[in-house]
Amino acid sequence: MNMNASTKSFHGINPLRATINARKFFSINNLGVDNLVQVVLVTQKKRESFLPHTTLDGVVEFIKPIVGAGIPAIKLFTEGVSKRDDGKESVDENNLTNQALRLIRNAFPKLYVMTENCLCPYTTHGSCAVHNRDGHIDAGATADLFVKAALLHAENGADAVGPAAMAEGLVEAVRNGLDTAGYNHIGVVPHLIINSYAYGPFRDLMQTGEGRMHRPSFQVNKNDRKAVMAVVEGFTQEGATAIMFEPGLHINDLIYESSKITNVPLGAFSTSAEYRLIVDNTRSDFPGGDPVLEHCQGIMRSGARFIVTYAAQELATLLSGSR
Ligand SMILES: [Zn+2]
Image 1 (cartoon, rainbow, N blue to C red):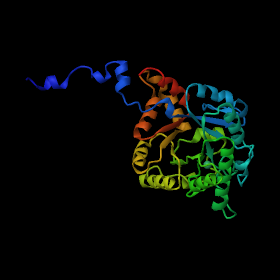
Image 2 (image 1 turned 90 degrees about the vertical axis):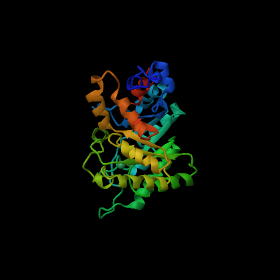
Image 3 (image 1 turned 180 degrees about the vertical axis):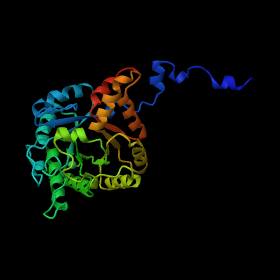
Image 4 (image 1 turned 30 degrees about the horizontal axis):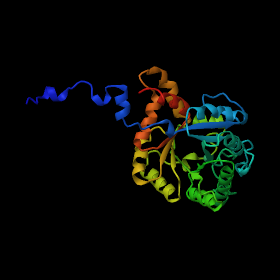
């Protein structure tokens, strides 16, 4: 038999990829509509921004097409209305988060609703924590507000709360607080925040301005893999239901490495600046595919199980098309 190089090296099109149904049947499809979480921003009033957002009275209409596209979950962020040093609005049952939750739960009983649980929308200084008179973080007072806010979110219909202060012990405090109150079924999905340029447009829109706190002292150094792994281990030990990395850009290696050391599901929050980068600068230039879709597929391939993104609805439309 003649097994020379020319007959081994070229057979034409691979049968696994030859037709649309072959590609569907044989492929590993690593991103589906079921993995998408749509970001929902609720502000006091409509503002100039490329980020999709809504006011409270429009929130149900805003979410209708998201549910209609088959997206199973949303991540809710709301603006603080009356900022104070002590961040007390976080535990007001009529703050925007709790009002939005009641409207959303009433209109969409089955939608999986994840909240942000943090003080930065509500503090004058923009910090995610309460500070005592000498400027240091008051850990007890901070944890107390986080737990109370989480209980209110649960009471008003959240499926999962998202502690976003990157402070040790908060995940455990919130988990214990929910369990003690009988909310064992409510998830705790902390934000694992890596210091990055990628948050600016969100802060501008949601009025949680940059520079009012020293954020790098909370966030993990993006160049320190071991520090990120330590946070993943810490969140896992504290009882996190899942862990949400942010931003979603430039972190595929960290997701991959994390997936080897924890069994907790990992996800990525594709942030405001990366949405702008990918959508504005590249989308219409490359008709052969979709940059946002490929970006999210890359994150999934790294080991994530869900993607929180402003583009969830657009991605759902793309995913329902042919490949
Ligand atoms: Zn915060």
